[in-house]
Image 1 (cartoon, rainbow, N blue to C red):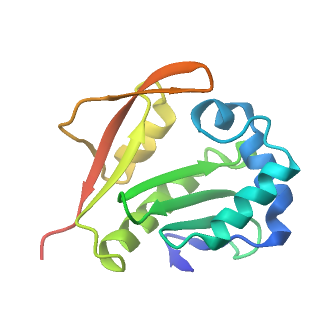
Image 2 (image 1 turned 90 degrees about the vertical axis):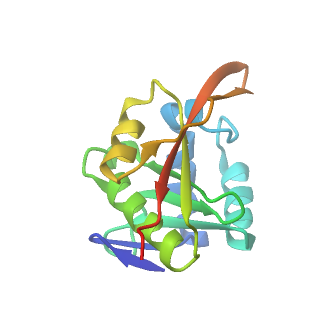
Length: 165
């Protein structure tokens, strides 16, 4: 559990299955993620099982009260990458930016990561704004070309470096 920036990031539980299904079955989320679409009950159960059993990835529900899940933030401990999504009904409240700041701080302090990464499509203005607001900068690396779900797109790498000292 991580508590920071007015959020409580907690582990997913079986009671969250309906939230997971609604969160990842959203057309905007399905478009931008490699997850199954449609994201049905079986996909939600498989995702939850994977998240609970993951040791190299930290999947946490974004909450303000420790109970109601409003989105997800995850940290890939092997790659040093973070991913996030906020439910459509909860966007525009700064949840993604606050969750990203909290997870980034956790990655630097608790996980000992000197560099944390995001991969964002150039036309994803909302995610670019979240990255910038959390102190991320474009990394000096070439864009990665990805083909998924029948579409080909580029991912730009954004980075956050641990504070000196």
